[in-house]
Image (tube, rainbow, N blue to C red; front, top):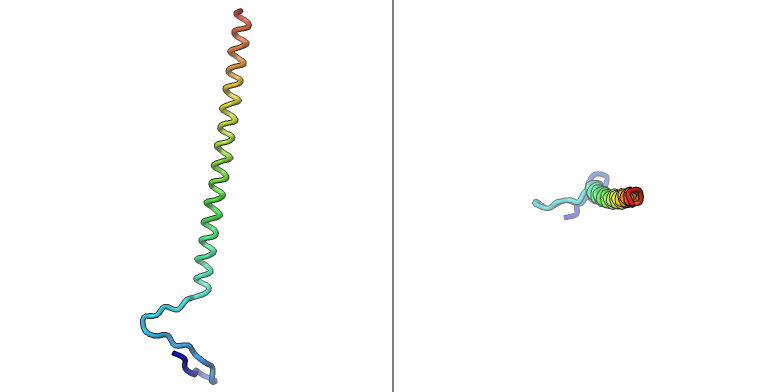
Length: 77
């Protein structure tokens, strides 16, 4: 419903039971969603980095152990 308010300005009147959209609140929700998405992506990136470092450490440990075994075999042989 449209009516005339003070100083002749057009005023939008809400019907009972309707919800007005607050652009600031809507933007806040969008910003929060963007933030959550960003945090999710960041956590996945960090998890991948951690896993790749763990795999690298594991393979280095295995190669060091294999090197120690071969040295032991060389010494005893």
